Amino acid sequence: MPARRFFVRDAHRAGEVVAIYGSDAHKIVNVLRLRDGDVIEVVDSHGSIFAATLESKAGELQARLGEPRSAPSPRVVIDVAQGIPKGQKMDFVVEKLGELRVRALIPLRSERTIVADVGSAKLERWRRLAHSAAQQSGRTDLLAVTEPLPFAQLCLQFPEYDAVIFPWELAEPQPLREALPAIVADATRILVVVGPEGGFSHAEAESAKAAGAHLVSLGSRILRTETAALAAVAILGYELRL
Image (cartoon, rainbow, N blue to C red; front, side, top):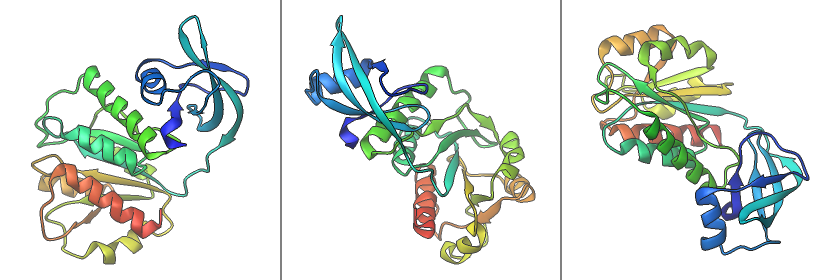
């Protein structure tokens, strides 16, 4: 029921009534043309999935929750740190990573990042896009879009992952299909780090390697920043059978 799946904040229990607002309410009433008594799926912040019955009260759209079921925990989680690109390229990245079931997207500030600041309005937009991507693709959680992080601070988080994959155009040109099995063997938490339009500097690549990252090549062609993360995650998904 992906087209009828909607997300609400916080944890909930069977029998509770939750309010549905904004674009979700518009979609239910004006696009899907559902009415009181029709059933939708509601997913709360803890990943519980409810069959919920629509009901209106005082002009407000509500849903009464049935018995929950839990989505299976993913065998492997993938986070992506994406160098913040110019313009609306990040919109595309958010949408596609949301469809590819990446757990979290970390907007990354690095040496060659051109975008000086990411305001709250832009973050909110990216989170709305992640919300739409989850509904469209039928996933049972939302891609988490975090606050932007400086490169040096991201490197400090590398030990939290079993494998950190660092695509770099100057990495040893070993085919990824040969390098990847050893890198991700038994890994359950993986981080992919992608640079901005100008890529990573030599100093950043060396810092990442010293912090435990695996510098890898995505092939002989230099991919655009908005393409690199998608390619890496798709290849990971194939290798890990996700």
